[in-house]
Image 1 (cartoon, chains in turn yellow, orange, green, blue):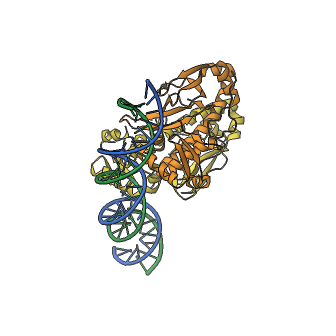
Image 2 (cartoon, rainbow over the protein chains, first blue to last red):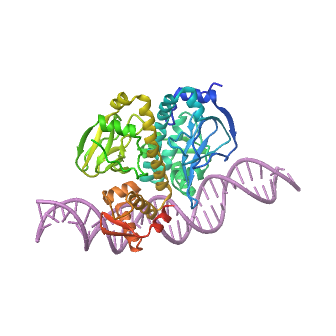
Image 3 (cartoon, rainbow over the protein chains, first blue to last red):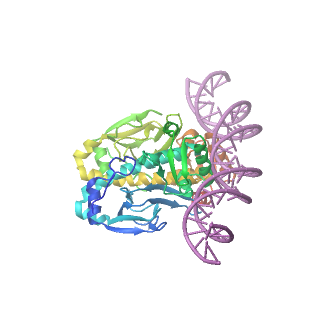
Length: 217
Length: 217
DNA sequence: CGGTTAATTGAACGCATTCAACACGAGTGG
DNA sequence: CCACTCGTGTTGAATGCGTTCAATTAACCG
C-alpha cells in the first residue's frame, strides 16, 4: 500500500517519512463510521493513526458537558501522537473514514527507539505550533476573526477551487470557542461582504483573500 | 552546582534527570532583569533554559498589538523546549531571575542524540498537556472559572501557606484571555464569597478549596 | 511626603449568548 | 409527485457577560 501524501501542505502534522513508512508497512487498515470513537479521552496512548481517507476530529468533554474541539485531521495527517502517556483529547471519525493503525511498540521494535523518538518529536512540533496558534485564537481574537481564520485555514489546503467543509456548524463552534448561532452569523456576514461565497452550507469559495488574511493577522 | 529541584511539583514541565544534569553541567548561569527578553518570538530555538531562580513568562504579540501569555515557569522548570525549530512564543523575565543556559547542540554532543530526543519528548509531554488544558480554559470557561482555576493552579504549587503571585494583573489577564478589569472584578468577587483572601494585591490564601475545585472541574 | 505605577471601582456600551421561531435539505413513504 | 419528518442551519429579539472608558484608590519608591 503506497500512500499518496500531499507534500505541498505545510499546515498539518508533518510526519517523517520513516514513521509514515513504518505505519504503512506494519499497520492494519481500519474503518470508522461517522461519529464513531477512535479512542476516548484519557485512554492510554499506545497506537499511531494515519488518516488514509476521511476526516478525524479530536475533542474534549468537560465534566459539565461543554465540549472543546482540539483539531481536525485530514488525509495524510497523523492522529494520536500526543507525547504524553494518555490522550487528553478523544478522537472521533468526523466523516466515515479509513485509518492505518499500528501499535507504538511495533513501530519502536521495527525502526528502533531512537528513530521513533526523533520522528515523533518532528511530528509533534507541528501539533505543538497548531496548539499555540489555537491558544492565541481563543484568547485574543473576536468571533469574526476566529471564523475568518478558520475558513482561511481550510481554504489554504486546496487554494484552487471551491472548498468543502466536512464539519458541521457545531463542530466549528466547538473548535472556535463560540456558539453555532454566532458562527452562522459571522458566515452570513462575511458572505454579505462578498469575502466568501457559499453555494451550499458546507461548501464555499474565497472571494477576497486579502480581506481574510487581514483579519487573521 | 547542584540544583535543589522540587520533586513534589507535578504541574510543570517534568524534565528527565539526564537532561537536567546535562544542562546543569554544561550550561552557564545567566541573569535577567525584570521584563528583559530571554528570547524573542520567532527566534531559532537553539538553547535550553533551566529556571534556577525567579519566574519566566512566555508570550506572543499579534501584529495589531494584542498579547497572549503562553505560560509561567518557576524554579526547576525548563523553558524553550518547543519541539519546532522556532520559538513561536517569546520569553521574558517576569521577575529578576537566574537561568542556566546551554546550547542544544552541546547537550546533544554530551549525552547523545537519542538520549536528548527522549528527554525532550518527555519534557514536551507536560508542555503539551498544559497547552491542551489552556485551550479548554480559553475556549469553554467563563471569566470567573478562568480566574478561579488560575488561582487554584498557583495555590497547588505550595498548598500550605499563603501564596504569592509574581505576576501582575495584566499578565494574568493576558494569560486568561481577559482584561485587567475583569480579572480584578473576579478576584474581588471570589474574595467577597470568602473563597480566597488577599492580604496584599499579590498574595492570597485559599479559604474554600472545594469551591475553587468545583469551578475548575 | 509627593510622584508614579498598579489595582480597583463605576457606569455605559457592545459583542456574543440565549431562547425561540423559522427555513432549508435530505430521506421516506403515501 | 407531494406530504411528512427529522436534522441542520439561519434569523430575530432580548438578555447578559465581559469590555471600554473614566475616575478613584491603593501600593510602591524615591
